[in-house]
Length: 127
Image (cartoon, rainbow, N blue to C red; front, side, top):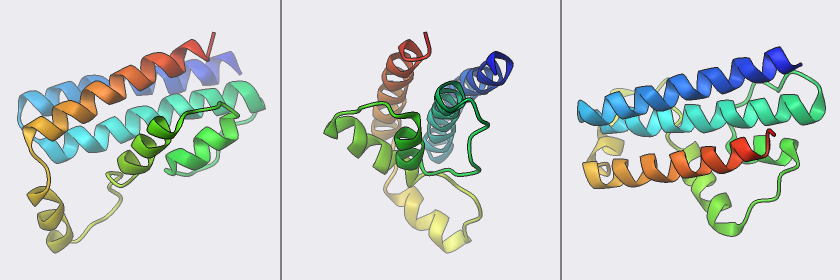
């Protein structure tokens, strides 16, 4: 299972680096998307570690935190809920345009900082 946990951790690191690159290029929607992906993958590492099973195919961060059996506070829960919204499977152009109107550099930076802090905290739970 350690190999599987490492797999998820490595993917999470890759996604956070992608978030940084997207921020530098001012592609703010993709900052939020890759932040969601980075958190999803660190949570999948935790689920793998604590359940000794490969995690389910879900993008629901609250479900993954529940499966990991890690206690989080209300602020963290609210952040995970908000971040889950930015998972992009397939969206129509009108939907993307509407979402883009609400996203700016300040918001993207805030999400990026919060994501990095949350991942750092969650990684402590892997030890």
